[in-house]
Length: 314
Ligand code: TUI
Image (cartoon, rainbow, N blue to C red; front, side, top):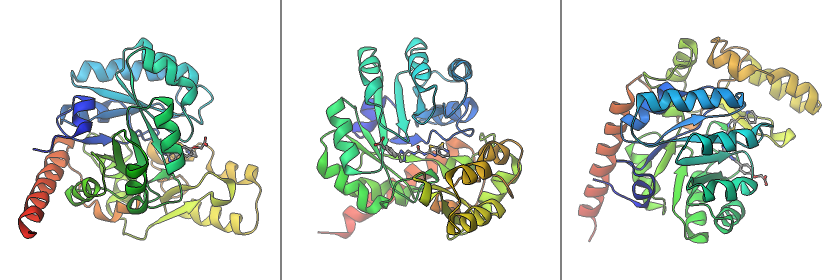
């Protein structure tokens, strides 16, 4: 049994949070992860605020366990989503791609646990000062919008810098990753890519199959020049994007290439011209499994490793 400050904070059975992935983290997946004993998240991303409300209600119909909402701060409607989360009585919020300080008062006054995703020590310290309950330290192995430091380097530095619990994310896909994260000073993990391949994940069959046949070196980072680096699986879109970036294309030209491209990959299954966001552990995800099976396997492996490690040293 692995009980940590994270299971205590969230009221979950296991110290595993599902990533708040745009388009992917909808209520079927979130409810499945929560029912399996982790913390499922609805990714508000750029969805219309009322859609987020519906998603929350549908998730609640499917689970009586805790679940949360991820608020993506680049979303112009983030403030409305922030209020909906409170109105709907959601207990946990994670945030991504920005600084959630301006929503902190609203959330804290309404008893919402706030767990910002950060990619640097400076942001982690700022979030602690602003009243965050924990932080997710996300390394650049992650899929989607990323920072520049690896999980291995980031997590212990964040753990040293703050007194609130730290959750590790980026490059974690099995029990070895969870055990290692605990060794780095984290109290749990957030995983995205592994859950994209879950049976309950609604991503298009093409997306799932592309992920399942990906190797370790199949992801690329586009958008380094625009200040919004994004990791996704190599395809015609990433090749074209990187070629244009090398030739000094403008932000607007590059944006045109990826407008609506995540949706077209996740929903329409266009894995050639769409954005197939996935982390560097993509090569480790070899089978589609239910969330219950995924979480049980991770917990058993981590418990075994932590037990045997303790037995190997003196
Ligand atoms: O947010 C994520 N991952 C995401 S968001 C997303 S939607 C999107 N799609 C295309 C382009 C841009 C966004 C897809 N994947 N992860 C959490 C995360 N947050 N990683 C890094 C950060 C971050 C970055 C800067 C957090 C704070 C931050 O602060 C900047 C500032 O000072 O405001």
